[in-house]
Image (tube, rainbow, N blue to C red; front, side, top):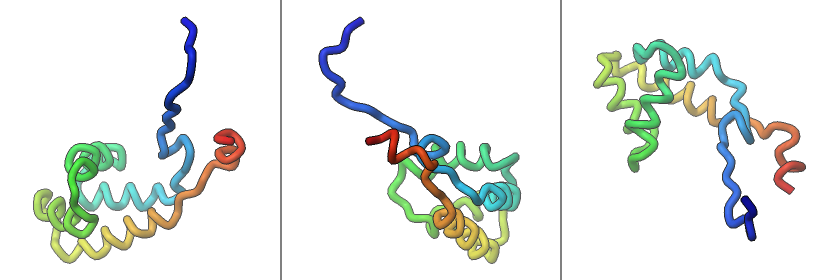
Length: 99
C-alpha cells in the first residue's frame, strides 16, 4: 500500500516521549484511595477525570468522598500529584527523533 502524503503523525506522551520519575507517588495515591495499584487509579482517571472539565482539587475531593477516604487526606493527594507533575522528563532521544 502506497501513501501519497503523510498528513498526521501521532505520539503517545507518557512513557513514549516523557517519563515520570515519581512512580512511588502514584502508588501511594492509589493505595490511599483504595485502588489495587497505580494502573487501576490511572484507568479510573481516564474514565472519570480526563474527559471532564474539572481541576485536580475538585477531582480529588470527589474521588476521596466516593471512595470513603478521610477528607483531610486530600491535601496529601494534591501534594503528591503536584510533585508528580514536577518530576517528568523527556527521554533523551525525543528531540532528535522528532526533528
